[in-house]
Length: 260
Image (cartoon, rainbow, N blue to C red; front, top):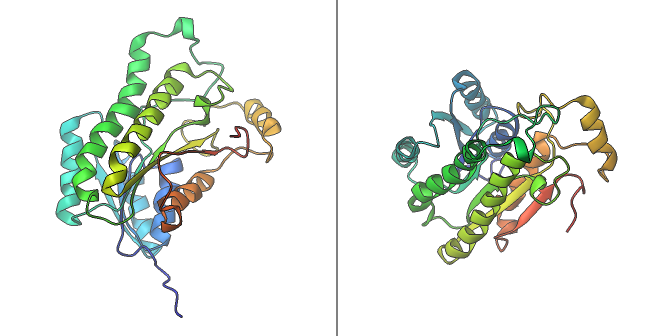
């Protein structure tokens, strides 16, 4: 029996925030399986277009599209372009969020925060996801084993460092994912959340001091922090047919830092 080198060649995958770090790794993982990948970006056009070209070189397809996902009109325009080009979406990976830097020396403590800072993160994570998934739903309803994966954080379960504004928004994102899973399950659409720990090689973690990375690695059972490829591997698992009966779940990708 022959095995296809490109098992996802008929699949359309939308990856938000795909111009670097985790998003890029996810896009490349899908492209390597032959998927047609929509590389969403906000401002980093050159990086997104380079990534789309890499997707094509791997045997899949790549198409870089810009949108500010906190603007509902731009979100709808993005989905309309996907509808015109492909007609459907098999997997939606929501990785985009409001800009953030994981620097414990510069973080604002709870008593230093204002609500606007929290709202910025909520708009970037939760509102953007809400409006995007609503817009994409008609393109996903008719696909078998359609899947949505949201990228959260293990800080929701274990505030190793209290990034209060960021983690509060991701907590709300997890709640949204579970409610969506209950509503969309009867439509054949699964919704799950991944919760990475600190991920090396991303813009958000670039300002994390090496001493903090080492400290987190020491208390992690697997002895290191995550890579973007670790997260991409978990995404591929949750969107696959092997996970076809898994929905509404939170999967930690942090080497055992959070268990249970």
